[in-house]
Length: 315
Length: 286
Ligand SMILES: Nc1ncnc2c1ncn2[C@@H]1O[C@H](COP(=O)(O)OP(=O)(O)OP(=O)(O)O)[C@@H](O)[C@H]1O
Ligand SMILES: [Mg+2]
Image (cartoon, rainbow over all chains, first blue to last red):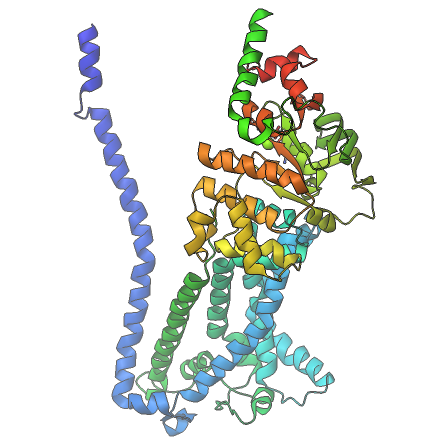
């Protein structure tokens, strides 16, 4: 009897039941792997699809002209992308100026200052903001925001970069605030206590301890939100107009007050205009898409590098 | 009864053996060590609740100035809670509620006109769990100095604090590395350095030597005794010998959040009034 027990417990070969357990583990692993791989496959497919058509486009339009040209008039076969790139960057920059300060401030308030009651009202409020369809934002920018800004004494065109950009900024505030708040709430209380114990005020603890400790999460929220701003289409199509315009360094205010166009909006125009699918105008959409992709990709790399440099990890 | 006496002898005997250079010369008996000292902190009928649970019951205790007061007692008896109610750290816990008086130099710190930030600048704290900031070693010590505006000669202050906390030799040439890269015991000393850098009047230390090796422990004990020349120190410890070695006054808390006995350390260790206290300090408790 004893002998039998000993051989049972020291035997390393798998019994039938154990073998099926190992097989199950393999299946779990495979299914999980396939799900993880799916997103990579989709990304690669998109890039390849864009690239194939973009290559065709660059067979018709010289890439040098495309990347250095300052005029985008598809009707005259002028495909200089720079006005669209500067249009996109301008929208992104202005929306960042709106969303980053307001988003971070609301995150600090929600994570550090708000009473549970205030939080229970504000958080769903921000989530609703995130759920509004962008076409509604576009409408609000066109009809109300421009009028409001004119009321403040600004001389704005019907379609203008400023309203559209501010509205894009408002749209991405919830992304900045909720992701930043998550990062700040994850900072352990023991660090806050250390700060208070040294005689720091709430503001000093929030800005000097919590924000630095959450910085990599906060940066990721910026990047995600700005990538969203770069790719935003509906608001800019509706409120910014469809006139590609180089950003004029000598007259930045004028550039904001007038209409303009972003890469996304030019893509919409290309696909909705009455041209053949083989025309350079139609194909330009893919070159623009690829350029857009390259810009967001570069931003992600940049943010990772910044986050790595500023990381204040806690355990 | 006889076995009780033997156990008690063992504790005090150990304490005697390890304290000769630091204490025996100035007051070999250490009776009356707290005589003549002014009271800096006094709690009167202090109750602390966490929600419905009462963590401290009617605590009456005085903390003498320029002395070391040790708080001892079994785990969960409320030592940290008492310490944290002195500098109002319990304000930060939503469910915590304090009743009764806690006087700092005669002023109830729970009065409405008391600014907890100003209070905490006078009463520094070393927490039970080392909690260095995820910043460089230098910035960890600099932080308190900066928020309190004590930035003149800041490098010198940082150096002195690290020196007094017996850490400087280990970190002197890596002040720019993260405080989190230090070992647990080093982190504990970094937190001590951070707390003493700003020169508080009172220092609350919650088991500051719990993760330290004997050498570092004895350095921290030396520091505590040195600090008691200028500051008032309240220290929580689970180490009876340590309490006996470094404190002038001892307060014994027992389970349920009661303060059972408080008095001169020598008397508590040699001749406690309560059997329960005697059992606890001789290790027969729990
Ligand atoms: N933040 C909190 N919320 C709720 N209850 C708490 C909290 N902190 C402490 N308590 C309770 O209060 C009682 C006293 O805790 P306290 O931390 O003061 O004990 P302690 O004497 O310091 O113990 P130890 O020696 O283990 O550190 C315990 O019963 C504990 O569960
Ligand atoms: Mg404790």
